[in-house]
Image (cartoon, rainbow over all chains, first blue to last red; front, side):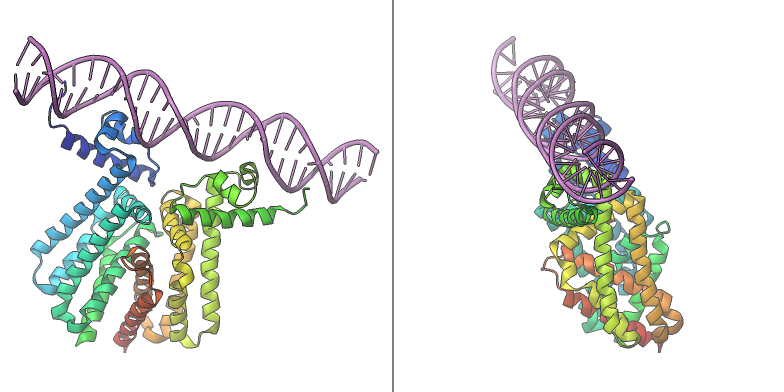
Length: 193
Length: 193
DNA sequence: GTTTTCATTGATTGACGAGTCAATAAAAAC
DNA sequence: GTTTTTATTGACTCGTCAATCAATGAAAAC
């Protein structure tokens, strides 16, 4: 019963299944068979479309980052003024979506993968650059020449608080993290006056 | 030629070898045989002393965190005044030691492990609490009632910048990260006046 | 000096897993 | 309607690896 044009459908199903399985195990220690089974196909087919397990992971990473990017763009679309835009970037990063078990697991494991896999590293750099460039752009009118440094600090604070919330003692609260970054933002703005 | 009292020696050798191997592979995907071989013994002996691979990892994590803690304590011992003590904590975290390949790999993988392993999570919480408590203690005289919030932000910034430096486009520079956190610290102090 | 305890390993077990391949089947192209 | 292309899988290969165990040797205890 082979229907044509299955490739994109299969690929998408495999990517979804990969993220789910990584979320369940917490590691990249998931087998192609597990992934394929959850995606409703044989492991041979997964290999057919992706070639190797590593490529499946890369695709999953790309998808996770693209969901993140979409969230940021969505929030930016509604934001008013530079301060509002920065707030949008912050809130998007700490949305409950991003603290779901699978998403946290995906990020942590992608960090690990980025150490040794050039493609993974490149994707992470794109994410880092986009965040920095967004922040610099909107910080400029608020803090002028301090924008570059401030952006670096805000971006670092976002990543760090995400980590601490995700692995902290309490269940992750995006609200608390958001408050903290906004406070830091206000300090940056205040210092520029 | 069995000599007595080998246990602590073997355990230490295994822990060292584990960290080295994790550094080489970037993952926890290292075999007990690799570790044991590097430590100069059979894999059976490694199992004899640690029981399981997971316990070897936990011991390696404990050791890594304890080295980190020792670095912080060493820096604190020489520091003068609250501001100096905070600076010491920051500099210790970003010392070149902590950016060595093995150490970065250890941290990233311990984050992953902490998702699913209670012991690993507990160790990470101890680290987080100690950092926060150090910061709160010394921020108090500098920023008064703002100390808790400021400590959360400084701690988050340290973790986040460490991540970004470790996985960033340039080779990690503790100096740049240190400068950024000190700048944030000055903003916090300035805001409390 | 015999027994117990500690150190140590080679060999083995039992399981699992990534990637390949030949074979089947159906749609599309010609 | 024959050929080509796409979809799909079961079976298989080749390898790996964590954990166990029985066996060996030497120190310590008695």
